[in-house]
Image 1 (cartoon, one colour):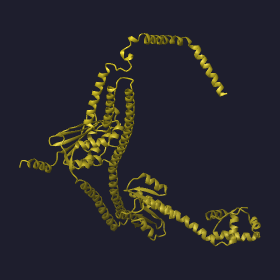
Image 2 (cartoon, chains in turn red, green; image 1 turned 45 degrees about the horizontal axis):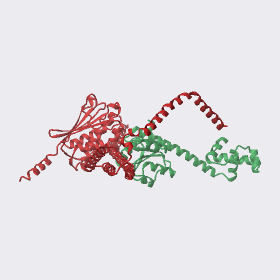
Image 3 (cartoon, chains in turn brown, purple; image 1 turned 135 degrees about the vertical axis):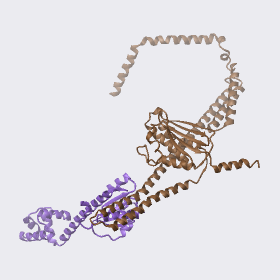
Image 4 (cartoon, helix red, strand yellow; image 1 turned 180 degrees about the vertical axis):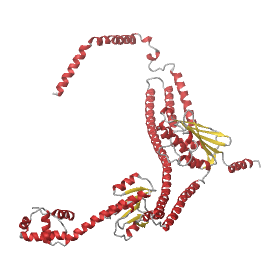
Amino acid sequence: VGSACGRRRYTRRVWNCGSVRPLPRIIAFIPSITATISVTNFATNGENLLPRLFQEGAQFAPATRYILISISLFCAIAIAVLWARRRSVLDQWLLIVALSLFTELVFVALSAGRFTLGTYANRAFSLVTSTIVLAVFLGETTKLYGRLASSNRMLRREQNSKLMNLEAMSASISHEVRQPLAAIVSNGSAALRFLDRALPNLQEVRSALTRLLSDSNRVEQVFNSLRALFGKSDQGKNLINVNEIALEALRIFRDDLRSHRIITRTHLTSELLPVMGNRGQLQEVILNLVHNAIQAMVGVEADLRVLQVKTQLDDESIVLIVEGSGPGIDPTKMNSIFDTFVTTKRDGMGLGLAICRTIVERHAGKIFVTSAHPHGCLFHVVLPIGTPGLRKAENEFERSPSE
Amino acid sequence: MMSTQPQEQAIVFIIDDDEGLREGIAALFRSVGLQAKLFASAPEFLRAKLPDIPSCLVLDVRLPGLSGLEFQSDLAKSNIQIPIVFMTGHGDIPMSVRAMKAGAVEFLTKPFRDQDMLDAVQLAIDQDRRRRRDESATHQLKASFDTLSARERQIMSLVVSGLMNKQIAGKVGLTEVTVKLHRGNVMRKMGAKSVAALVRMADILGVRRETA
């Protein structure tokens, strides 16, 4: 029944179509038929009027030579340029494409004319080469994309582990401190309760207070050992290019910057001299500043999120500036922002900038913040160029050839 | 100050690998007249001979060897029912949820307020005391039940099934007077003042009821 219904509907539709506009269709045929007739008439009777190219199938058009020469010239230049730079896999493949095109042109130039065996052989050759090139190119692209994706994953992992290290460190510090703190609270309140008794038990009060003091010393020990820990990692100092670690920090946060739709601008001076320092620690400083800037810009309108990283040479020192267009810092907090446990974040520990200051001061530098206009703030890291010891070594090196 | 007045002797067991903290908490308990016994690890606690009085366990989540949470489940598996108050150096919420679900009395973050710790321990000891009272009642009931003769047990199960003396007599083939005698013995030996009390005892003991 269903199919019968369908058929009935179909017939009706055909009938409707035919009945609605029969006239325009017929009219539309007339000019096309006329055109066909006149073209056919022209081709058969007016053969002499046709261009030479149409009359002699095997001949090239006169302009072909110039076109061939100019394309071959272009090809040759491209091959030369590509051969000279040959930087990436892409360059190599472009080279092969240019070569195959060049060979094809040579074939065309050598062939006797159009529609000869040579022409068809040339066509076949170019088809095969372009298919092969395309296939290999696709394969190469896929492989490169795969490599890109995996390196992206690695970057993300690296970034996570850096941030996690800091979190793990603060968690273990807090655990180490909570332990003696709990003991201090227990001993202190025990002492008070023993004192509050109708007959105070002074013996117990004394021993509770003695334990309390030794627990307080333990807290201090925790921080002493922390300092020792920092001291250890302090030793590996090298000459470091600040531009390099700034770019690396941006690279590590590349995905974050993109996902937060932050425009990144860099103004890195080319005349930057290296500084003497611990690469990992200085890296940590820049990472922290960039991370803070990203977090500060979360609440800002997407079009206004701009992160600027600048380096410049200033007298005897190198200045690195990280500027974010976040809401800026409350002027009353401007001076205390680098203190430990001072934070403007809702869930911050107030450790990041304090660690930054410790590291920068350890490198005989300074770190400070200024307000940006119309909003946001600039963090300046000022580091001295090299060290006195290093400069002496350089001088000696300069002197030795003259002696 | 009800919490600081122990009704009878009780003891708190403290397991923490930090000696300073152990001593501090012990002093806090002593200051309110609570006895405390200290252990550096879970195995040390298991090896010790423990007094059979109301008690509770103050346990650090992070212990050398097995964690506090693992120890909690181990105790539950070996049917050692001691209320546990947990302490932790990290305010770890998932961990505290797990501990509370597994029956912990309280989960305290170091450093804790002294009163919080004392309240938690008092609550735990009260819980243990209640459990012990229930257990000893059951124990007494069992002892009484053991003194019944086979005939008396049979009569008891018929009585708690709700049968009249006459029906019982018919069922077991005794005279009604003899049944009455046995029934009196059951009530006396079990210390039951009414049939309702006897039914409750039978429930606790798990005496099978005869269906009429």
